[in-house]
Length: 402
Image (cartoon, rainbow, N blue to C red; front, top):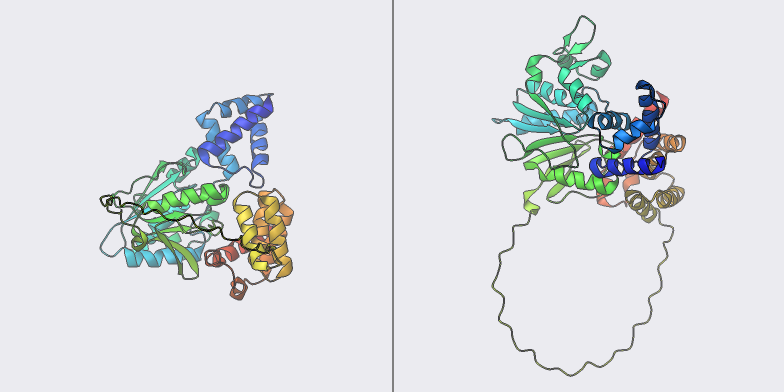
């Protein structure tokens, strides 16, 4: 009975929120939530909480989502990417107001970072920050943070925050006035921009990891479809795709990957032509039978490291963790310097809940120095994510040694 209710809960989380519960630790997070929430409510049976979740109690669902996805962020996270954002704002924002959307905004630090950069560059912006977590949005709207959240802010931007009597930092009104918050599920249709022409910039960082690859691809397609002409979509280091969304192109900007709307590749609707007048079909003699072609030799998988790598990434994208491990291990054995294979092995083990193995492969990739020549021979759409893969490996490796 409990198993059936648990299956129903997992089905709801997949269907309504797109969550991949195969990600390492997700199911354990649900177990811990049920136990801790039952104690908090002085309940002897965690099944009571499970019933509320299965029935769709919005408050309990919100608490569970926070427990499973860990909405945690900080100001100016990934400074290299923020430098690209600032340069783009200076170029794109001449004489116009930029519409910026920050989906999955967590507790609001990314949205306020955009507003801080807008003051620095003197570029007017309208920032919409959305998230599925009501509690996270409430924190974002309070706009009060600990000093640790501002640890990567440049000094001039940090100086704009107001230090409170309790030592915490508060976002001032001139920054807050540029940002509005709303609840939104990434599985739903994107919200419209204020100008009606689409979003000039979408910052959706480090959230696709929670989705299985097909769902992540659908989400990115929806995001890209809501961009303005030459609008840009920026993802996080851990958000790797295997194909560029339709109507877009992938750009290398400052060693980072940017997805930009590309109207030159958007096909105009074909004109309807009147159907041709049917012509009589001449009768022909029956063709002579031709002897069957000799059978082609069956090609083996071989021991090519690139082929193994590509098959491993493909298996991972479909949720075939066993196949991914087999091919990626073979690729790394055949080409020990192929550090991207180590990164994907880390991701595969992480999704399988094998944290120690995942950390070992992430550390191996990070220690390689991520030489670009090891990307030679890989498909272009995978080579494009070289910097993001390296950044992910370094991040995971730092987390291990922290």
